[in-house]
Image (spheres, rainbow, N blue to C red):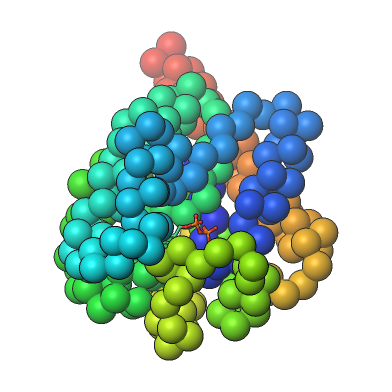
Amino acid sequence: MFITFEGPEGSGKTTQIGALALRLRQAGRSVTVTEEPGGTRLGLKVRQLVKETKDAAISPATELFLFAASRSQLIAEVVKPALAAGRVVLCDRYAESTLAYQGYGRGLSLNLISAVNAIATEGIRPDLIVLLDLPPELGLERKKGEGWDRFQAEDLAFHRRVRQGYLEMAASEPDRWLVLDATACAEAVGALIWQRVAELRRGDKRRDQDGRSGLDIKNSEGMQ
Ligand code: TYD
């Protein structure tokens, strides 16, 4: 199971990922928690490059490739091996961040970004994308005093486009997205996430059982 968390600055993704990881582990699952940009040695270097304000002149396309480079390394080094080992992977931001920030935010073509994402992700898509939705003013207010990075320093109009982008993506694929009001208290948000993840897990078990009974039918047919 691969679950990603998206949302604007200060939407509480880290808190919710921690809470979900704990619940999953208590339920006996092995969990890998990771983040973008970051998650690998190379990714951490990219994280520094894209966040620091002194390189403010990074072009939108360069930004796209930097995030894609971090993502492709994370997929190869962390996500693919963890999923192959049957672990649940929780990732703080993923491909949809690039569509939201570099696409809706910076104005790069969504089709081009999707093509780059397809290379970086090797086609690995989340089973569930949790969007912690929040008016950007509120999120930025929550982060005040921490020192702005290049994205936090963008104007409100940029952050509004990012939010709009997320909401459009979520509306176009409601089965994959869970949109939650991040202004609600963290416990309430966490309970809703857990409810949806529990549904996903039940769905998985059912598919496993169906798969097995499908096999049984085949076997019994073969024996006749
Ligand atoms: P981070 O400190 O991780 O922000 P947050 O805590 O809000 O997740 O910084 C990552 C920043 O990089 C964030 O502002 C969003 C931005 N970003 C992109 O613009 N494109 C991307 O593909 C990704 C993964 C992040």
